[in-house]
Image (cartoon, rainbow, N blue to C red; front, top):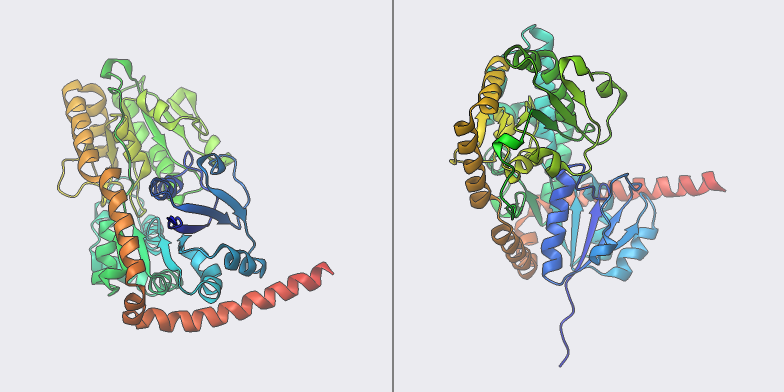
Length: 432
């Protein structure tokens, strides 16, 4: 009896995954693990250079194939591979390679892994910059956090980034979204058909061992890739407004800040006398998180869901964050720590969690319940596979009903194809 071959998946990554450096890469690795559990045949490609902390995909049985932008060698590669599913990691990869995939593998299911809604993050960043220009108050951001969905839409709708990103969603057969809030925004404000989107949050297994005890922990922690603008802004707000307030109440408190790709501007903030320690990259984020009593995540802008907060929950470490940090992460469940809008309240709640064992244990229990209710791989993994298989089965219907996507592919792919071919010829001539 002839056994059916495994589904072939090609992942085109914006970068090679670095799960210990960013939540975005961690989410990609979780999706790859779901595919591996199905016995699927996976190839991972990227035009990016290899990063310092990239995952060893070959050890997992995943082929690694570097590719080039604006180079027809990709056409030969994908024609020979003939994948059943192509997963674009971030919409920029769909912009670059989507037309080549459609031309050479028209029957492959085209899926976009969005990570977060980048145009929303960008719009919120611009709004924060405007707020900081017009106000000297670096403490209260209640008004900034209280934006309604309609206001978010108005900030995004006229930007080039939003038009590019939303167009890419339409051109794909399915887009994976980590945030239910962002799905609601796309459906209700941008009128994207709900059937083109799939909720796929972070998927994590609860820790097998009991968390480190309250008495065996000390101090505060912030963690996040410094290349991610919301993390750098959070460090600045900690330094200028929040940490001085915490030190007023806890003069011996220490804050340890970890992050990949630490720039000189960050190390310049290190001040041991103030208990403000910039520690560079943490080789084991869960280990340093488990040794900490409270995680601080003062995010004034951002999108998606936050890996640092999921890590804190995994380690039984209560956290203090903002409405941006908590967005789409808990629905109606109790928050495992505190959600605040002002520097004063942020500092007060952080100190309270640090000192009050009963409150700290309650937050830890809430974290365990939240992980079990929203982030279980045993729920979201099968749901993802079921959705992909259903999309493959009904691919012709999905594309027939998505005329907007067909129209956008026609215009975008033609212009992108000719530009790519022109760049390739130009590069070849420059090398001769």
